[in-house]
Length: 163
Image (cartoon, rainbow, N blue to C red):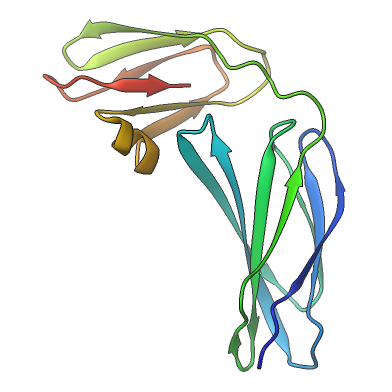
């Protein structure tokens, strides 16, 4: 039986998490697949996937949000097949940023100008969809470091926007 890998949180800060991966077996490990999950504004679950080569590994994941819960899951790729998943949870330190205040204004039938307030020097995600279900499961999205963006939409549809 292939055991799951051990994930150990080495350190964390406002915007990063460092963790180590190792196996407690003599089975040869060729690498790991790691998923980092977090929930954005209770509407959208985000995920970042890392594919890591080698047997032992210390990884640092940056560009995270302060005071946000993250779930890290990993499995090992071995000579005998894939291991079961293991999980750890961590909450980044600091104070979570205030949610931006969004204004959306139709420019014409197919373009909406979105603008918002918020801190500078961060990346904003713009999510939009025609229903709450689509906004949660598979919204259209883009990112920017600006405080506004023009979004192209389908005509004759109503949209929900989230920044």
